[in-house]
Amino acid sequence: MGCVVSHENEERQCCVTWRKPPEKLVRFLEESLRDFDCEMRKMFGCPSYFIQGNMFVGAYQESLFLRLSAKERKKALAQYPGIKPFEPVPGRIMREYVAIPADIYANEKAFSKLLAKSVDYVSSLPRKERGGRTKKKI
Image 1 (cartoon, rainbow, N blue to C red):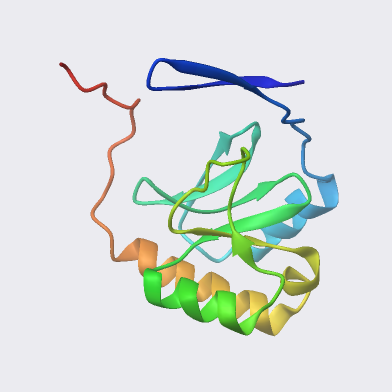
Image 2 (image 1 turned 180 degrees about the horizontal axis):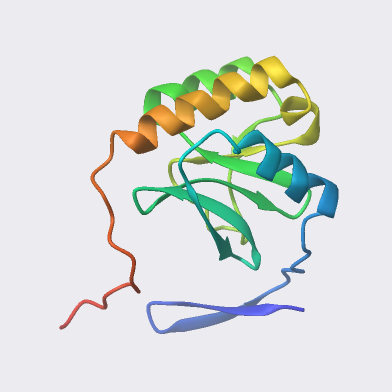
């Protein structure tokens, strides 16, 4: 299934095929977060987790994504060659997020360290109230 991307009075088709993450990945994420005070919601039809209303980790297709501070993102991108900026739609990078491939989240020590950095960062952010985006009035 494709989607339509709208941007500043311009519409273009993109060839995004949305795939649900494997059940094994969903269970892995649930298990990894059992000791954290967080809330699960669906984003992109996939499980995503929030602390104080701020998303910090989720499953997307065959990978996980994490929210990291600029400093920790730079370190992660340099230290782990498989980590890339999170781009759920081609050309639309979600700033502050990185995609974590299977070889890295399968490494318990590496993933635990990255997850802890994400939790620390998101816990430092102001609470975000739940609700839809507000449109700018012109």
